[in-house]
Length: 150
Ligand code: FES
Image (cartoon, rainbow, N blue to C red):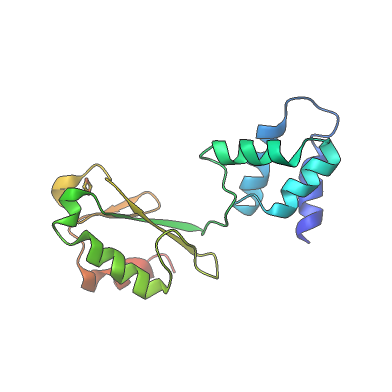
């Protein structure tokens, strides 16, 4: 049960001061995001205002208040990649996963995001899956790339 797992993590921090960030990182590590239920339980048990927990969780890039997939796909839409068809690559990934950029598949396998530059402009159009770079991507290659992470 999600609630039990949340409580078990909070148990480690009860009666301690200044532990909110570490606690949220532990929750993030366990669930890959910060579920609303966790914010509620932390607020109740550690007597920290709900709004303060949200502020901290929104501030730190390592914490996410939205579910994130196991694999993060980043498709470059920067100028150099755009002129080489970056937006068509993004369309192809969206079609393959049946989601729009900025969202996560229902099975939480993939999160898709369009980004401004991946730092390898000469090799565009570029995309990244987790830590793997793919350069010179063609629309016809997109499915094959994604299959590696199935
Ligand atoms: S513009 Fe795409 S990698 Fe820089």
